[in-house]
Image (cartoon, rainbow, N blue to C red; front, side):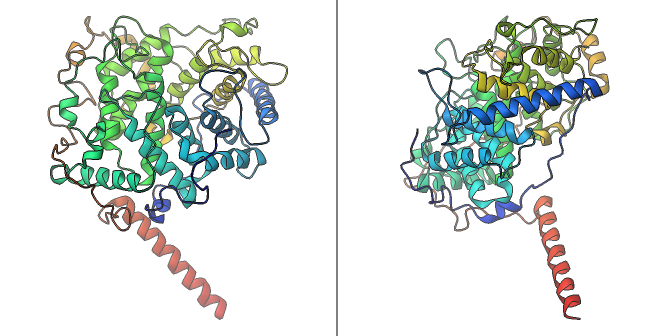
Length: 498
């Protein structure tokens, strides 16, 4: 088991103030894009109960979910966070022993967490657990997010490892990010941070050619990172520059047929799973720029068209497919589910994606409640079961992003059929040129380029960690809400005395 080199009682990022806890605390309201029939729902509910029982049964006394096979990277924090997140989404209460043991393991090992998958899923789990209302958990999210930001490459994506920022270095990194986002022209980059992508001139990075065959980033690590960082915006972390460049990565690298590949290199062929990652990237590009997007986005429509063509049609007679564990790709099912709920699509390319997945999952659940094999690298029963349960529950991990999307949902299938993609795709984007279509980066980016000047000493962290902008409507609303609570408290005390 991994052990932390630091005391678990020491706050990982104590310089960020408790004000973070009051930022963006909406209630989580899950929404199903396709309600199952009563008969189907009964079967789904039973499958979920069995899957939850399996996950609880295979958790170790230390709170970890171990890989089925030895060798390779264990991703213990990521696996444990994924399983605990899944249990929460399936209705297991936060006080449950399985959740608390998982949390204890993460707290004990936070100092050693450097893997992109581990950092990303831990953020998603901690946020779902209630980190926005818990100072210590919020600080863990903050330090994990800073490590992810530092791990982004100049091509806008991530590989497997991120720098282990902590302590004074994390404080200085945060302060520099904050200054850079507020006033880039006046910000002096400390030499120790000059090589980090987020500190560089974004306009220059947008002219880079393809990463090439020797590239180290991939769209799988990248999609996990941007999901987590989208959530981390709720924790006072400056993220516009990071997510801006990540969105551009996907704008630039869509294949001619509407798909995306695992690598950064665009070409003629991609995969359904990575196309789902690309759709998330395009959604992020809208969300971070806050542009008033048109109802049609050719790149999104082409991606959905590609995805729809490659989904199996549900059997016309409503029958259940024959059991075939080896043919079910649970990572793909979960990826399709995330697209479906993100864009609020009951169908993709005219196909009922939920019915398509449910029939595969109900037919292939094991006798212990698990799902085996998986048809993707790193598949094992625990991860498969998590992906399957998240699919069945129609979980949207970035629900607030859905509100910012450009599509007219009721017309999306009509738009896909009417869409006539250009024969050469988007060559201007692939060649490193300026992208002109909806939601893309233009010649006057929302974010100005970073200053390329450096200083001989790190920028000192602000005494309070960050400053609240009282002109911000969110902060004004928070202030008004707190004032209202104070008034109610005074009234209550007055009435009690009477």
